[in-house]
Each structure stands twice: as structure tokens, then as C-alpha cells.
Amino acid sequence: MKNILIVEDHPFVAQSTKTLFMTMDDVNLVEISRNVEETVSMLRSGCDWFRIFLDINIPGAHGLSLVRHVFNVGLAHKAAVITASVNPQWRSEVESMGFLGYMLKTAAVEEFNRGLAAIMEGRFYFDKSERPMQGSHLTGRQIEILCLLQEGYCTKQIAKMLDLSPAR
Image (cartoon, rainbow, N blue to C red; front, side, top):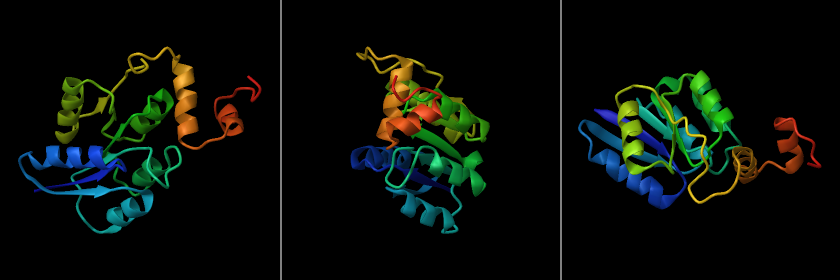
């Protein structure tokens, strides 16, 4: 039987994802964690997690801090990131750590389901999309900066991270 941990602070997304997993064969337990503290506690609980699906943007997380924690405790091979953050640098780092995937919540339903199925089967799935969300006239770099602002970084920190002048 498969135990799944969903790390997601948005109640609708978390419950919808849980409902989806509960319809799958051999899924025994689906738990939802809404912040870093709960997640760390659940990872230490001794539960044998079959898959762990992490959102990057949850309370208590800063950038990839929670992703790095999952890697450091040796669970990257069971985990995937599902996020709204279109960040090629993060995706690359998640992939290099041996995670099963990096999926965008904004993906088309068919694409999202394909990625989810691959990850559940233990295959790698990394959305290589560089495109902004439809309807956006922002460049990839602008979206990357907005994602970092959303994560709580100040402009000086972002400038240093991206090797930019803070005045630009």
C-alpha cells in the first residue's frame, strides 16, 4: 500500500490533489502538510512515504529550503515538486538532486496527468516549459524575478542572486 504526502498550503489545491490520489489503486494514506514545520514533523514520523509532492511556496520555506531538506534526509528519490514557479534554475537544481520531477500547476490538465502518472510509476518528469503563463507579456527573466519577490527576497538579494545591478 502506498502512502503519499502532499505539501501544499492552498486548501482547494491540497484537497483536490488528495481526492485524486485517493482514487488510485493501492493508495493507502494521503496526508496534507501546509507548512515547513508540519512537513519536517511528518518526514520524521517514521511513515514510509511512497511519494512526496512538494510545493515550493509554503509558509516557512525560503526558495528551495524545503526541497534541500528533503534531499538532505535522503528522500529526493521519492519526491517531486509541483509548483506555480516557472524557474529554470530551480528546476535544474531539483533535477540535479535526484528528485523525480518538477511540474507546473499551470500545465494543461492532460500534461499534468501525464507527469503525475510518470512520477507515480517512478519515472522522471521535468516540465521544460520556459513560456510564461498564457496572457502574460512578461519575459522569462521578469517572471523569474517576480517569483523570487513572491518568495520574499528583497531586490538587493535578487540582484545578488542573479548577478544584476540593484539599480537596473
